[in-house]
Every structure is written in structure tokens, then in C-alpha cells.
Amino acid sequence: MADERDDNQFRAARLAKLEELRKLGVDPYPRAFARTDEAKALDERYRTLAAGTETEDRVAVAGRVRAVRNSGMFVDLVDPTGKIQVFNHKDHLPAEQMALVKLLDLGDLVGVEGFVRRTPRGELTVNSRRVQMLAKALLPLPEKFHGLADLETRYRQRYLDLVMNEESRATLRRRSEAIASLRRRLIAQGYLEVETPMLHTIPGGASAKPFVTHHNALDLDLYLRIAPELHLKRLLVGGLSDRLFEINRNFRNEGISPRHNPEFTSLELYAAYVDYRAMMELAEQLIAGAAEDVLGTTRITYAGRAIDLTPPWPRRSMAELVLERTGIDFLAVADDGEARRAARRLGAELHDGSGWGRALEAAFGVAVENDLTGPVHVVGFPREISPLAKADPADPRLTERFETYINGWEVANAFSEINDPLDQRARFEAQMRERERGDEEAQRLDEDFVTALEYGMPPAGGLGIGIDRLVMLLTDSPSIRDVIAFPTMRPRG
Image (cartoon, rainbow, N blue to C red; front, side):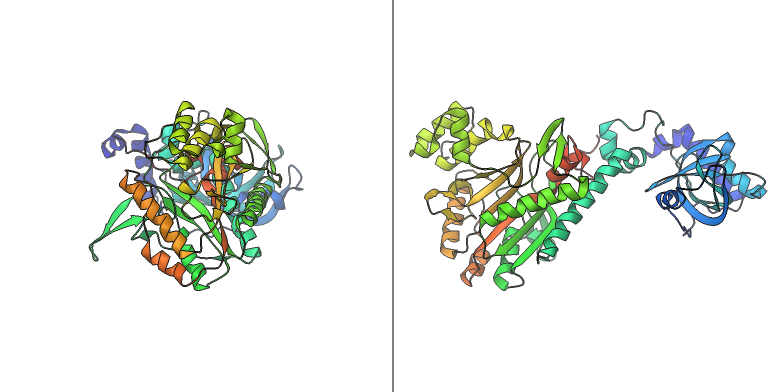
């Protein structure tokens, strides 16, 4: 890479200009600049300023040079809020300043002090009285009219993508707005924000394959967390709060796809003395509220498809949806083998040790999931695949769990949480038997968590919302990489 840069004629020309700046006594990378205003604030303040009007209002602005016209007489500076035009003229600038202006390139970061006016053509402008180089750019920006269209480069060099593409900047700003909306609404309802460990001695709280690392001082293998669930419920046991939440990263050693990134952000929360039905209402409030806060409406469009997020949302059972789409009534199937055969007829892949619950889940995955435009809460999840959810008293094969689907994606997952330590131990032991049969994603027995439950955890509802997928929906983004500032990429060979 260094050799390529050295051979780059454009970089060489900029390095020559860098030396010219130093000869002029200019520090091309100063420590600070006293900016008084951003572009948007100026535009709003002088919205009524008539064309052709000059003021005595002195301001200081800073931004990246995005256009240079008439040998530097007119320069467009862009900051995170917008664009401001700068007028440089020899009648107002000393010779050394005009020499600096002649050395400007697209992409340079520049500070300008001067007086506000509106040109006869109506352009809000700063008549410069002092120009200061803030950072000389040694590499040129992509060509203006084609921008940065290559997806590979956009994801790998996100900084360049953000410089060139307003759409990318808007997407990541909306992500921040969505997270702020979730946080604000939960705090208003009395939820306490907490932080739990990223390094776990036992990976738990979800069915997923973890990343493994090693702590040298303790000579101990540790796992990047796959979910914060078990630590959050420990805090519930301890009485830190009856309502708590965490917004943070999880890490799962799985494949990459338009909807999956190995590290991702989730909201996970717990509320004492309620069950999963309360979590349905909360999920609707949070997701619809985020849409309202970010977009000003609960009616969104994704990939040309209209989706109405206005609560309440339908509740449909997994078995009911499979029956409706396939004619197969899994609730009437009592034998594991028969359930596996039925799922396989639909195209599902199952190993011979899979039980009734995994067969139902697999049938749902191939026959139903992708067509759930939603939003819809899918209930009646099998106990076999829900080791942390209370059993359904009406059918012990099922649990009080739901997943929320929008645009065929799982966006939220929630349970009535198990607080019976004996039941929880039995569920973990069943998962361990699954691991022995070769399921690497089956959960492990966490003895300390079971011990915590033995001290007593109040009945509770728990909810997780995938932030990245939610932001994809709110920004009409086709890939999860569009909504993550720095997605995981394979190194260039």
C-alpha cells in the first residue's frame, strides 16, 4: 500500500503543496480552530437575508473543501450539517493568505473567518478575512460525479464513504436516533440502564457458537458474549432494579449475510412481575416509537413494500402458521420420527436426533418465516428450542415465548422467564445432551446462574430487539453492512 501511495502522481502533487505550505510558514496540521458556527445554523439564522446584502457579522466556519472555482475565489466548505460558500479575494486577504488559497485541494480541511453576506444570486457566503489550513489531504477524493459507488470500498473505507455519500451519513445518524429513542422511552418508564461483561467463562443466554479468546494472566479461556441475558437476570435476582436494560454488542461465530454480522447490537431488557404478554406490548411501543421518532411516521416502506408498524400487531402461533401454509398439523403429531419426516417433506434439514420441537421450528423456517411481512408476533415456540422460557401451562411441549417478524426477519425475541431453578437446571441438562449429540450451538450448564435462581428471582418478562435489523427497516437499507459503521470484512489478500 505504501509503495502504491508513493507512485500516486496525485499524492505526489499534494506532497509538493504540503512543502509549499511549510515554506510559507503555515502549519498544515494545527492543534485547534475556534469555530463559531456550523453551516446549518448560519443558513437558519440568515434565512431572510435578502440577495445582494452584506453584513458586519463576523463568523468562523470550518469544513472540508468540496469545490474550488475561479482559482480559489469561491470555495465550498462542507461540515456535518451542510455547505457554506466562501469568497476569497485579494482585496480582503493579504498575499500570504492568497498564496495559501492557491494551494487548496479538494478534501482539505479548512477554517475561515469572515463576514456573512448573500450574493446577488442568493448564495449565503462568508467573505473571508482569514483562511487557516486545518488538515492537508494527501489523497484525492473520488471523482465528484461518480462518487463512491463500489460497495466493497464503501464498507472497507467507511470514512471515505461518509465523506462522499450523504445517504450513508443519514443512515448512521438515523441509527443513532433510533438507539436514542429506545433508551429515552425505557428510561421514561423507569428502566435502569446497566452494563454486563463482554467476556464470559461460560457462553450462555442464546443458542449460538461463541468466539474464544485467552486471558494470559489467569491462563483461562474466555468467550466473547453471545447474549447478556444470564448476567442481566443475576442483577434482577440481586434487586438492583425491577426494570433494567442494556444496549450493547454481542458476538456470534457464524456466517455473514445481508442480515448477519458476527458482531451486532441488541437491546435486552427485563421487567419483574410481568410475563411475555407485557413484552409484546412493550416491543410494539418501542419499535413503533422509534419509527415515529426517526421518520415521523409508523408507516414505513422497505424495498418498495409498505409496512404499517401501528400497534397492536397480530399474534399467531407457530403451529397454526405452519398448518395454514402446508396443511400439516404438528400439534396432532405426537411422534418425533413422524414430525421429522413431515418437516423433511417440506425441505427442512434435520439430524436423526431432532425432536418434535426442532421439527416444528424447521418446518416454520422453510415454509413460513420468509413470507411474514408483518409485523406479527409468532407465539407457541417449542420447549425443545426455548431453554430459558417458561412452559405453556396449556401444552407442556410449548413455551411462553414469541418472536416478532417484520419483512420476514426476526426483529425481537421474548419470554416469560424461568425462575424455577430446578426447571432451569433440567433445561440446561437437556441442552447438554444436545451438545453431546453434536449440536455446537446448544446451551451449556451455568452452575452459578442456577445458584442465583436458587436465591429467588421474581417472575419476569424479558425482551431482546435486534438494533441492526431495526435500523435496516427504518432506513430502507438492503444489507446489514449499510447500518454498521465498520462491518466485519474478509482481509484483502
